[in-house]
Length: 279
Length: 306
Image 1 (cartoon, rainbow over the protein chains, first blue to last red):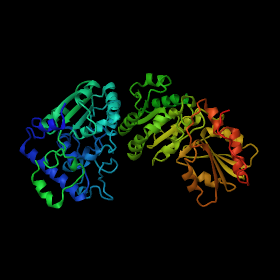
Image 2 (image 1 turned 180 degrees about the vertical axis):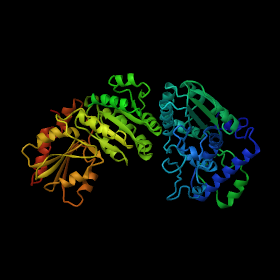
Image 3 (image 1 turned 180 degrees about the horizontal axis):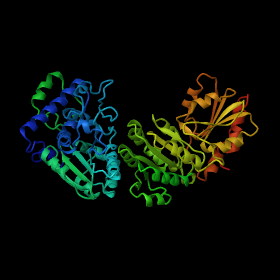
Image 4 (image 1 turned 30 degrees about the vertical axis):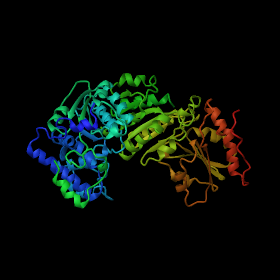
């Protein structure tokens, strides 16, 4: 079991793995954008977005195959951000992929904007589910996976849940359900950034999902090749749980694993220095 | 009505391959024919009502039509936030069919009772509420509305009226015309209300759809400046609709329904109806009080068991 401290010390956690230089630069650019938008709009959970940014990027760059043209394809793969408070990370990735008009980012969380602190599927192109209330997105993903089976489509469904979100009983209800129904088109990515450990230490998620009948894998959630390999797995008859060891605020030293920065923005005088140190 | 539900769903599953039935380990035997014929569209998901509701929303996102069934206390009260967020807020269509509303399961105690269900669902924007009075009315109303893209709550009552009316989703029926007052009877209250109104010069309107609420029929048939609403759940769930419908009329309004109490007495539905003065006799006494020009000629007896 990895504690907060051991997660910090674990080999290569937070490092970019074998990422190409331009990919590293892209991640830094996206993180920069996240900080700029959140600071300008005074909204958004920056560290929560940073812990899943590599996962989001791999999903939209290499797994989902979603483009502006296929947004309404009934047989598309689906992604649900069950930890909806990390929405700013998803918005930035959608904009980077040309799915969301980046001009919307300027009004994030403001009156009349389509972009809120938690995403709304009826407003934002590319958002599959309106999440925010923890413990809703993952069971909806299970329903989407079952629905895909009923429709006899090969569509797959991916959900990111927070480790704190895994306090919710619906996560485990749905984990039982998905295993029982052999939803091998369902992928649950646990963003184990250890932010939930303060309130309730949930123990070993890999062991837990395994005992519920899932195929499980533990990865460095900041190594994009590892993420890709994990999300490319298919085990007939079993849903896949990817326990992604991540660092909350990854890449921004001052924010990393700091509860102070959960929902806070840099002052103008500290912004530039923060942006310069991103990695 | 509970016996009718599996037949209605079975028919629709044959007619429409988008219909998917989910139930929470309740009514398994009743759904056996459905399950045998459509094993890939009938799921006993287990006892996980909140997840069942979210799973149903995911199914709706695939363009399918979920029908979700269990006891009202768990379908509506436990999974209320899921109905609100996952269906209402997301503007998804689905059908939620309960048994055990109010005190239909009185002998099981208050954990299995839900007089608040109708009022709760009516607080979800875009949601619909249907309280049929007979099995045939349920069959008709369900088939009329099950694929209309809204989250719709159907309450299957233990009691049924003797006669089926020509009901239509979203519309009220004028059952009796009189001048002294207008009385609204909701779903299975109709027989008792008609019995209670014998010899009275009143208009009786029959409501099976509570959301949308047919304000027009009420306005057009409002008589005598007095309205009495007879409803089989915590009274007042439709008060805002009624106030809106009659906003330009002086309307002395009386609500005769389940009082804001836990029906903690066990027994059966008739027992609790007696305790809450919702038998035909109890309703008659309350109507007479409401119609009386004098104040407080009627006082409800203290709430003691027979």
